[in-house]
Length: 110
Image (cartoon, rainbow, N blue to C red):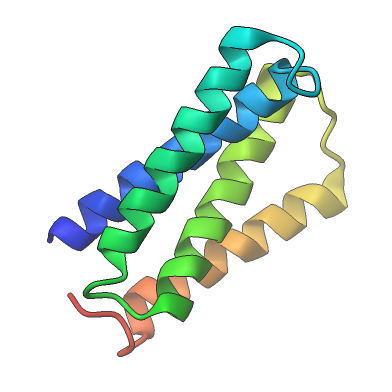
C-alpha cells in the first residue's frame, strides 16, 4: 500500500515543480526556482521508493500519465491554456491507459 502513497507523492511533487517551472521564468525568479528544485527532488525520491516494489515501466506510465493530465488541467485553469477537442480526446486516452494498467494488468503489485 505504501507504494501507492509514494507514487501519489511523487506525482503531486512533480506537478507542483513543473507548474513552478513556468513561474520561475527561466530560473530568474528565486522562490519559484526553489520550489522547482525541491519539487523535483521530492518527486524522484518518492518515485525511487515506489520502484522498490512496483515495476519501473508501470510506475512511470502511471506517473507520467497522471502527471500529464494534472499539468494540462493546471495549464488550462491557472495559465489560460486552451484545450481543443483533440487535446481532450488525447487526455481521455491517457486516463483510459492508466485505468487499464491499474484494473487489468497483472504487472502491478497490489
